[in-house]
Length: 159
Image 1: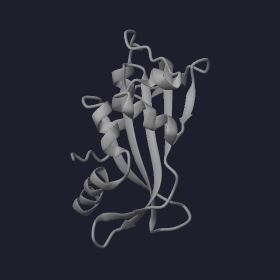
Image 2: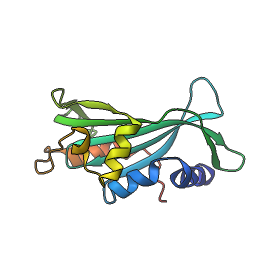
Image 3: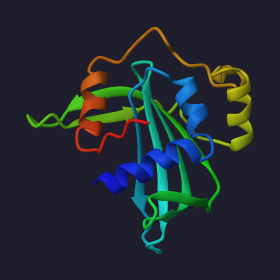
């Protein structure tokens, strides 16, 4: 497990855009992790997921070449993908804490291109520069429990 954590720590420093994301969302619950590609054991899928504003889930993914022998990300092998989902409602499904989310389709911006992301970064996290107007004063009831449900089984890696 320490090897995995060391590899993720390396990725936090070296994978493009991760530091930008962490600066834009400094106090938001954030997970950085590597998923396994289904087609090549040396290619991993870097993921950064941020929960913020009491209603949003921001995701970043990019294929990476993982050097498991040296616990590092040796190369980015794909095109960065940025996602933003706005939670509309949350419904508890069972007593185990599983919560189902429905997403706001009228304001759904599932994919943000790298050019748009660069504009957001230049504007210090202001999504409105690309036409995305975030609701920042109306959290969805139960959002913290929803976030906990997603994060509870993920390996937490501090930078």
